[in-house]
Image (cartoon, rainbow, N blue to C red):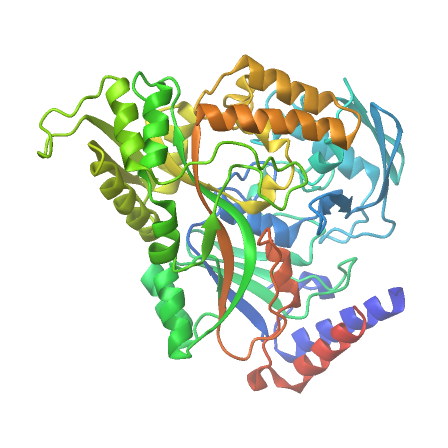
Length: 537
């Protein structure tokens, strides 16, 4: 394997030299320009941090997936499986021992050791840390190196979900500080080359990647906020592909015209409405349920989403091992919505007249897709007498307000990778997880939910965990702090001719390492390299 990897690296360096560009992988200064054979991908928004310990948005997560690895990753059954860890042992209920893969290299050439792992976790958990992942590790008592390739994690109490907690954070180099925000260094299939802020991020294939180099020369993530412009650039061929970042109407038009191919896979991304439980109006359960019954989710999926979604049940997707099918689900029932509003004291002031029963404010992002959906929800609520004021903000501003609890209703999405571990119920709905500790941004609190989640957290068997999570899901669904709308169907829209397109349920961008674009302009040296890499995977 080492001989093949060295051969592949030499071939990549030969290609770079032939192209007149140098990279640090060949021992020379790095150039910013993309190499021939690079795949260009459009994203909606810029990453809010290149440091994987700090980024809390979808684009940051996607960048992290390309540049970094974690000790564990999510397997096809949504359980934790080894990544940088060769294996994970559990000698007793509160101790886990990670055995690292030998010979894994960071992009700067140094070999991964237990010191890097210990530093990653200690920096994440430091009192000064503002990482959004920090709250996931409240049960972690200590982490220490037993030797260069062995790390011991000790917990304060049994926590059967701990292996999935090792899917994050991505492992960073020992001693890495502020420099990660400007020039991140990881162990992932791509290495950082250049970031033109709010414009594009250039990554190069990492020839020494422990699981085999990518089948392309690199990835350029172009930041194109406008939905129509992303579609037009894909049609013109200035983009290679877009993953889940095109409105369904544009996906439909591009596929029908033959300008693009569309690869669909069942996805997990969750669209939802969230309520502020400290607001005097939306803290009323009858109001929250009235909103849930008023929204025609099936119509949104059929007409607005053009079938690129399915009805959502809650944070835990139906494919998850802890999914509870008996939890309350909202049907479309405007009559029940009006009845609930009446009982809550929001009476119809003028029968069929224009005056509303009550007014609510919904905060959304400026994305066109979000605005269209909000408009449909606005119309649905108007039919039951709720006047909805829609306010759109740039994503960073929106998230700032949400974290501070400065909202009444908010429309957001959870990225699928966050939903495979049922411990997400704790992070989002446990009363101790209000920001900055966790993601309970609506400040939801129910002692019975806390107790059910705590039982699941401390359980020693999967069956016991499932029982606790099932009870929590049933109770949460009754309280309706969220209105689940839909789970996304992944749609990879690509220029014709791209090969290796495949996307798992979580939409993980690591799948891009398999994509290649046969391009005569890149020359026979690049084609030979692609064949070489494919043969030694």
